[in-house]
Image 1 (cartoon, one colour):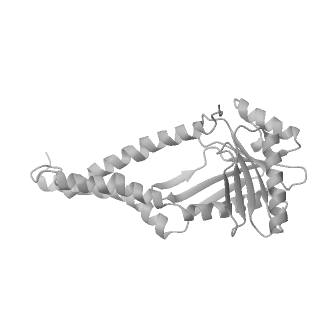
Image 2 (tube, helix red, strand yellow):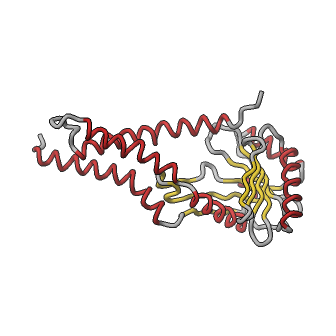
Image 3 (tube, helix red, strand yellow):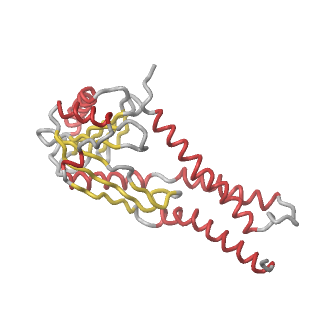
Length: 272
């Protein structure tokens, strides 16, 4: 058996490791630049539907009938993308199609493996900025950053033709109002534009995750230490830290993924 001193040391080592696991991403997110990367592969075959993806096949053929052709795939990864996530990678990457005039681009991706494919249209402006129209989403929700010249419209229960019609309508309105012009882009330029937009979006976030750390790690640890009897093993700083880390782990590794999964599937639910 371990001596009391050895057991105490082991407990502190465990507490230090779990605290590092929780707090290091929070510190790095605050101090380090967003490490978002986008691997670009301009092989058109990578944008074509793989076997066993009938919903992707259907959407791909619908866009192909509207004059779009495969362009390639981009694949994003990010270190310390949020205060509670040390590393993230795209599930399957983003597959891209391009219009005949090279001014409108279609993207396909999934957030979770068992959802229908998500699709959207994007146009990029000379001098920077972009317009994106996506499905599924909250119908009619428009997010605009006039300073960054970035606009996003979400739609639900639309087919590719309807989505493109809305996209072109919004594009015309923005070009007239802001005196902008869409530009042709290579896949490498699209990848760079997506990284720049992603870094701005990630840099604005994070506040909720710091609250998450406090509610599900710091608060349980402090409460455990404060409420435990002085003769209880839980009335030990390292043990209290381990209790708080256990609560955090359940919420971070089980509850949040389940909620994310349900939210992703509910986005595709047809309105009654």
